[in-house]
Amino acid sequence: MKLICIGRNYAKHIEELENERPEHPVIFLKPDTSILLKKQPFFIPDFSNDIHHEVEILVKINRLGKHIDEKFAHKYYSQIGLGIDFTARDLQSQLKAKGLPWEKAKGFDGAAVISEFVDKAQFSDLNKLDFSLEKNGEKVQIGNTSHMLWKINELIAYASQYFTLKIGDIIFTGTPAGVSRVEPNDKLDGFIEDRKMFSIRVK
Ligand code: ZN
Image (cartoon, rainbow, N blue to C red):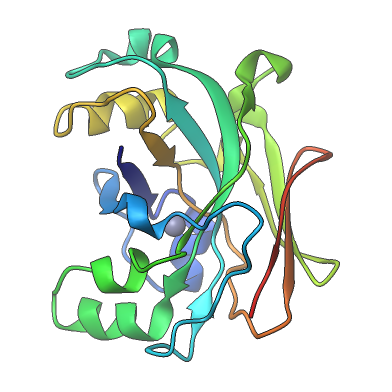
């Protein structure tokens, strides 16, 4: 399975990193080895001094598809979740400056937190979904999917022009503003609306 990640999908996060607003969705992949195993802490890798949390709504693909039309995209997922796209910001900045791929900064072991998935029918409108991240009990990221530059169905249509989507693939739909560095002993709790989706310890 693959993790398809969307960068720069929230205007305020684009501003906080002083990135350009993209013309098309920015896509990168994480390998399946980046998935943080259940109930394991996240270990800060020794090649970075600036690991950031990026909380993101996840979509799990449940049908094989290629060149999916946006109006049929809703048929390709029945569950959503919440995750963290951990990013070695210092390394990513160096790679970006040289025009090199980001994978080392985004695809390292443990860099993908993935919650349990829940039936999307439990939410009245996926395009108006509140989600948030607490760091040590304080809300640091607050998002609402209405602020996505590209909505879930548009992302599925777009990504499937390039990559065949397979059952079990997961889409990370991009992070809202409020990313910050994590330190050893931090506790990260993720929420969709009032439902706690994960709790992670940083080591
Ligand atoms: Zn991200």
